[in-house]
Length: 351
Image (cartoon, rainbow, N blue to C red; front, side, top):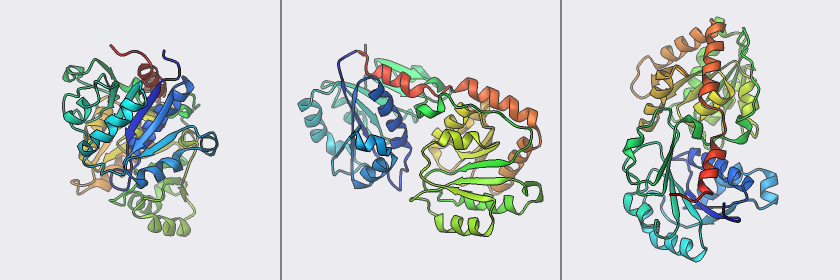
């Protein structure tokens, strides 16, 4: 391993693309720091800077653990930033560049391959990426798709989760008392409020508390606050530092497909997923096929979406043995140590 290798991480987050890219890259950056590397974030605009700074802990901020460089570019058109990126990589003796963006092109990635090792965090398989390393932590990956990469890391073992998810104790209880609800950063379809209102009205859920994640970009934040004021069973959570512990305090979970499903697996919380974007569907189907997390469908084209979601939740609530078996399968599939494995690969010589 090189002495304090400089690793650039190019990613973004905002109200349109939400916070997922930033969150998983920050997990990798923290693992890189533990290995003695120097991770530096490169983002497009002030929105990404602001979101990333909110995710960094007070201790990390005091220690100046992560440098953030702002390009003042359009994250939707990355090819325009190629010259400035080339200048950064060539003038600072970069060891590796990790890119996490859905907007990159073959030209963009190929432009940096002669300057340093390059890595791409993929979950779309949009094209054959010309990079040194591809990371795809989908449960089932066709690794033969990647012919231009020197190396491929594939499967749930490489899910870049925060360290808190690798050693989180969990026990599935016989009675459901707490339900965890995550809808992503924005919740444009008001799933959290729609589901919570229906659950609060049902006698069979009268003894259950509903823990809902919200945040500054949540589209229906005001409506959720109003619901929480009317019903004490609705508990809103924002800026959670120890997400693993919050999940572990719950008996059931509902989440949009994405990184949160891997987190729920690492903890072992019996869950139901749904989708609201095309890129979420393959992952949701993969979790369902593997017998880990059932998929209630896509909110955009499912007229009986909430009925399907309630039915799936009821099936888990009423059968503790099913929840226990599901929890065991989930923890076997994802152990929460993926970020450390990625950091190890990024700081090794890539062949």
